[in-house]
Length: 123
Ligand SMILES: [Cu+2]
Image 1: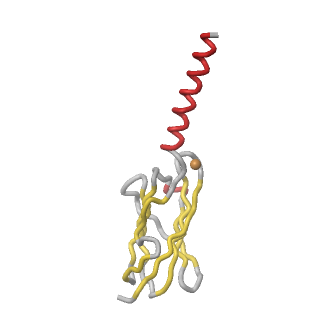
Image 2 (image 1 turned 60 degrees about the horizontal axis):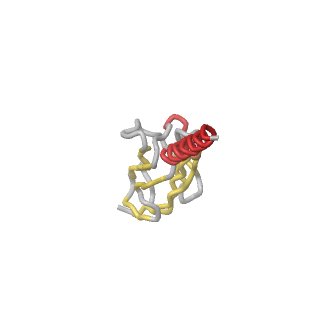
């Protein structure tokens, strides 16, 4: 009985540890971005920075730009400065409303996606 109790306590402790690890290495959540959501920036060249809560597998992640005319282009990702960041450069943007569409793969194997709307104003 004592051994069983200890076993159960041990399992509970292990479960807690696994739970904490799962939180620490959970799927990706966007922590901040540049341009920030709903912000207005100066064109025509706009650096794109996405910062996440976990490291990102850039080779299996995708960032696209949705243009004011609803067309969509793939953004070429730069070499990662930090494992939890994706950067790119959107060049030649005319004034208007845009959206960054991101889809990333986190270490826990989960894919998450989201959008960051922003506006480009004339220089
Ligand atoms: Cu996950």
